Image 1 (spheres, helix red, strand yellow):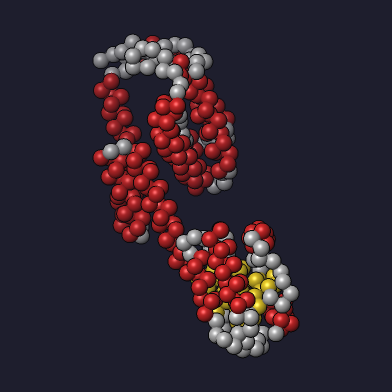
Image 2 (tube, rainbow, N blue to C red):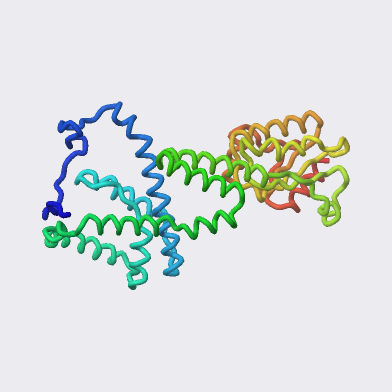
Length: 328
């Protein structure tokens, strides 16, 4: 079975909404059209970004180099915004072609340029011959490409060794892709991945009283040191910080070691304000130790500032202990 072949001309510039639709008339542009296409456009953009970054990671492992994610996504974004103006479709990095390129010795951007020039030459010179390629052989080729892209062995290995939550997301997204479409699968997968991330972050956040420092730094019994770990956000702030509100009545100064706090959102700031008020009501001073400058600026904007004898900030535990003794 043969077709009429690929036109031996390069595509010309045209606004996408001026192209004919199913009825032969220009599609036009309208709010309803944008609203209809926006979910699919976001899904395609996210899939393209994920596929390109995954491809870059695979290429790094094969070549021993390190890619710049920003360069990858900016380059892909610019390309995908330009190609529709010439009748093209959004594209992403291809792991199969990238792997073949690296195995052939291509390690510079020049390899992609040569690839593009070869495709242009095929369109301009070899297009009459392409019409003689049997569609059955093209179908077989596409089946092989689809099978190789499915990475069945990797899928099975992931199901065997991955954590149960990750396996659930994988199987659900796979089922939704087969039964419905990729748009639904990506939306559900991102939502579930976000919930799992929040759950794991909540489990990482904790506040524990440091006992050994009482001996190491000869602390009086009425000074307590708490080690705050993990990100403090809407899901973890209350759980991580509620321990501090249960200090014993003989404690006069509380020192918070915030060295390992990686995030502080508005919910955590409100929780910190509640702790400050609660400790102040009990006439207990608070010292915040080694909080990152950007997070300290958030607390200051919220009104949690240094107050003599009440609230202090320090960059080292030794200075925090000295400040605590002065507050007694």
